[in-house]
Length: 238
Ligand SMILES: [Fe+2]
Ligand SMILES: [Fe+2]
Image (tube, rainbow, N blue to C red; front, side, top):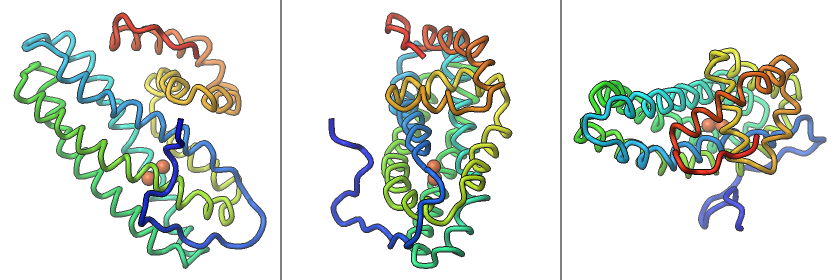
């Protein structure tokens, strides 16, 4: 299988500053894989709900609402804690940082577009609204396939040279604090599902309370949600 995280023809990367690697940015791929996994399924999940089946639209809509909120928080963490530091410490990457900010603005506009559609569709299971929502998710996936890939390829090598491990951890903690535990725990299962190679190691590195809570409650919540969303599909081991 070819690696998704490679530069496309015509894309350039900023120069990577000299010096030792100060932090490991591998976990960005794991997080991004989870978003890609979710948004690849979003249009099909919405279109698969029968007209008027509000039980199903409620269930699918809650999961998509959580995914949207988590993506928003992830970008907010980067906007708050990453871009200014990168521009300040590696000025040669300013152009690329500007492109990352522009991608975030595009995603934010699509999240704004999707939000009222999601609320209305979740309560009505109206197919016309669902189609507009599925279309917004398709356009979001197109932007994310570029942004999530390019951020890993172009930004992470610079991040690893100019951010300390503590500063990098701060980014993950900022996101985790903004996401309610009830939503965070089952999402760990989806994260492991989307990255079966690297996801389990990320859970091992998570703070002890998160790890234990996932094992005690989160995994069961994930399995129940997975079974509801994708009936008949084998439940991934997490
Ligand atoms: Fe990211
Ligand atoms: Fe980003």
